[in-house]
Amino acid sequence: MSIITNGHIKSLRLDKGFAFVRADGKDVYVPLRLLRDSGYRLDLLAEDQEIALSFEETEPGKYRAREVLGIPTGTLLKRVPAGVHSGTIKMYDDLRGFGFISVGMEFLDLHFKTWQPPFPFKKGTRVTFHVDFMGEFSHFAEELETA
Image (cartoon, rainbow, N blue to C red; front, side, top):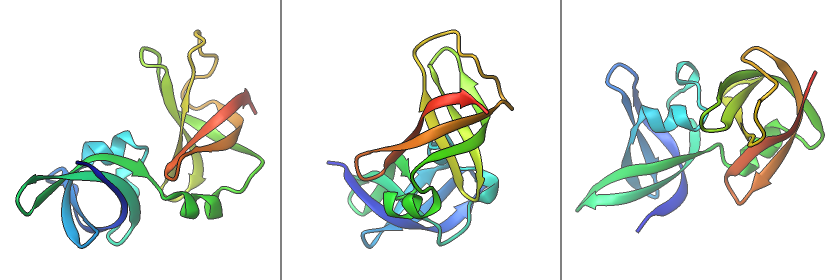
């Protein structure tokens, strides 16, 4: 059974490819690829940073993250108020139909999806967008246009 909660980075081992997050009184092993795949910039991660994640007990007393869900919505709302925002396309995967927009805020890249190829933006393109929220932890950019 997976638990979804907030936690804080307890220790960070970029050189070894993992972190431990303290969540619900447990130390949870988090492979850095899960953080990277959720839009975190590894070079900006810091101990005690709050993240949202789901995790499970893999054996008695051992816990492993299943998914990093991003910055908790309450934190994100303080950083990205409602309205139109601008940012730069950080990356886009044509085959899987998703990418990330760098918005110039510490620890924050926004996820976006498009299913209408060809995608008109390339890495480095400045765009405007709205932020939308799905559930307690998930946020994404929508209504992208060239800035």
